[in-house]
Image (cartoon, rainbow, N blue to C red; front, top):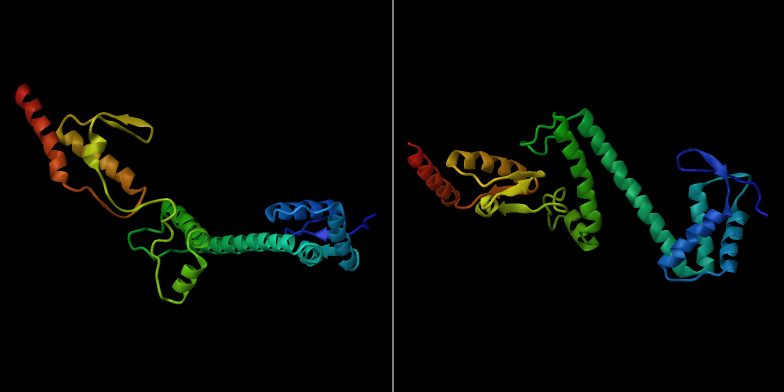
Length: 242
């Protein structure tokens, strides 16, 4: 029978020690390691942890360490899977703490990294906070350890890490193809422009929307040729009207 032990969780609350939670956690690690632990193995881990607890109180962090040590005895592969997952969660906790610090600095201060962004605006602050998160996700999940180390040592520099996961860079936008026959933008249908002045208005809407979905330069190549078609449509329309 398990002795009554109070466990202090990370958020400061307390609960009674439950060996079943340890069993559930090590089973998940065993699945990740593609290992089947026996009931005896699971019981051994719980008993090893109970034997190491001194007194009637402990913390979640201490229990994690005890579980790791017990798994080292039972199965090294499962121990590694458990340890890797724990390190993964700790790394994420550190990453989000860094993002929180950035968010505080942006919310209550100013960000001068980009002269084109007015960090006093709420919309810009939101974007900057998201950029802080995306930058760290890019470093964690896209760059290899070797690339991260090379950048840290100054051999390379990966620019715009805060935008690379979700968007593209330096777009040559095919405006003629978008306008031809009409299109849908923002869940609203747009008809193909019938005159030059309407084409200017619609192109302005498209640029505003499309440029916001990417980073870097946004170019409409040969815009004169795109507009020539609508200039001709205007000519024929006004010629027939007057």
